[in-house]
Image (spheres, rainbow, N blue to C red):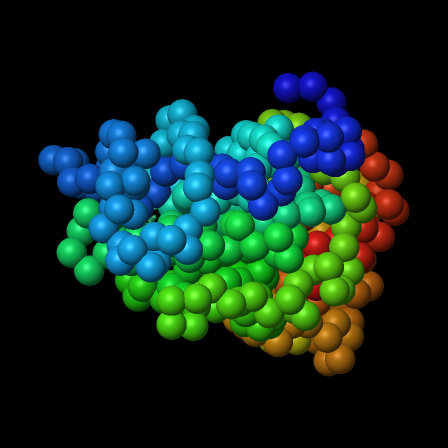
Length: 365
Ligand code: ASN
């Protein structure tokens, strides 16, 4: 893969396409996940002919609901995977696929496994800054053909929102709600309502058969990223360049040191307690400060699912501030870690990276 290559939206065909936006098809990109899986002797695994199966399932919807669907073209990424196998390379492949095609489509639906769906959605948001139309990620807790499956409802909702021109960001359509991609986490391993956006309200929801958008909550009404895509090469960082360390009572400085001292590690996300507290162990804080001094980009999120950090509020949080660890505020771990990857993959100075980390780029903080 080549060096970072920002693609200017204006020159990517988005504005030169002569077909009006609302007449262009939605693009459905199939990346894998339970939605498309079938039973095999080894357990659920991606099945064949996803497009045919999807179109046949949509044909079973009542005519009034079918009438509300946009026309779409379908493309499968190879190979379809269980999203537990995804790496930053997969985020990059998807980001580039969307960036290359989005100008010719009204919007994009990404069909993705739920296990790491929020990581992909967060990464897409950073790669597709300045998006001027919807990119809607969805999946399912049960395979399309399974009894009581949520797949068809989720795809229907995603298609409806992907044709909504007022939505101009990466969002997740799931279980009747539309959530900001970079604010969402998977909260349940079995329930059909598996996702939550603990610190940001839904961008839309299904009301009866309608997909209702709340435009006032959209990115456009708040901060927007620079009007360009940023598609750096995540390949080198996919080799373990960014680590995630959750503190536990009794964690030792040598353990933190072991993670951070390795030259291959260029950044780290620390999951700390409550509002931003860490053990007052000088050796541990020294290990963090040393890594920061070596130019490693370190940030902290709370282990709590909602509320965010107030670093320095407690004396127990002062050490983190003094060690130069950046506060992720109320960002999800997914949003913070994918942002570290995104910033480290670009040829930026350390100060610029730190400043961008603290700046909201796509509504992530
Ligand atoms: N393991 C599956 C995946 O993430 C889970 C799912 O899609 N519901 O691909």
